[in-house]
Image (cartoon, rainbow, N blue to C red; front, side, top):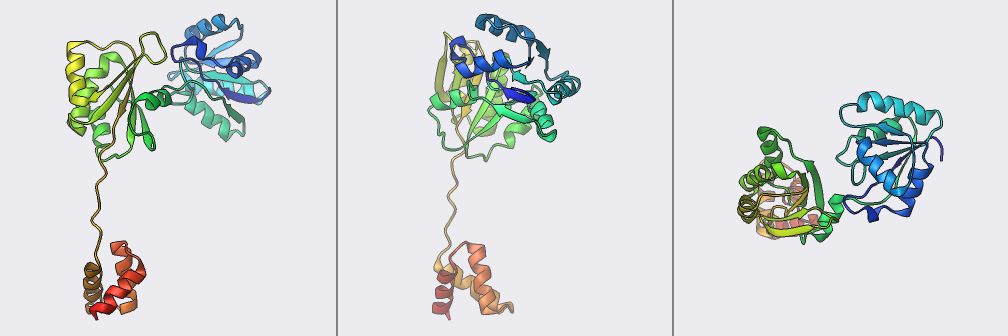
Length: 277
């Protein structure tokens, strides 16, 4: 291991989820860049690993990123970890990965715990297509603008949320998406009190008004229903071709344009125009 950045996922709750490969990478790295060195030190002590730690988080990433980059360019290997889960996902490590990519440094991502995938897999929501929206802003205006931009999103949406912000977020989601929109609230994943509440936004608001939320949440929200587009008919195609021809366009070009506009096969439009003629 030399001159590389390793992305090492750490447990999101259950320390037993650290993999053999993740442990070996932490042992062999020259140093570890950690979001909170105190949190990482507890994990290293649990694993019986002693290693040099460098603090790397949102408010020092500009300065420390260059320091870490210089050490890697000098031939050292760095293991990047966040407090929990996969680094560089909704995490300042994203910037360090970009710096390494620009400098031509190899970045190796090791699979492991990730709250997004864990929550999505047990949510009971559609998992074929989804989008990860991370943490919503603490500012009401920005949070509402973010949600309003997702009103037409048909994919399942995944958010992270802290307990003290949950009610405000649920209320703003209900305003944007409607109180009957399905949601799965995944709490304390992989921990002793893990819980998944599958309900609607309106019912979730009632539940947590009566029972104050505790623990970290991953919110999995159903996407908006697909809007069925009206399919153009042969009569529509014939009428449009006639309209275009009347405006001076050649029949050949009119057929081509109509096929594009109505999203119909060209031969269907041609046959419809021929019958109309």
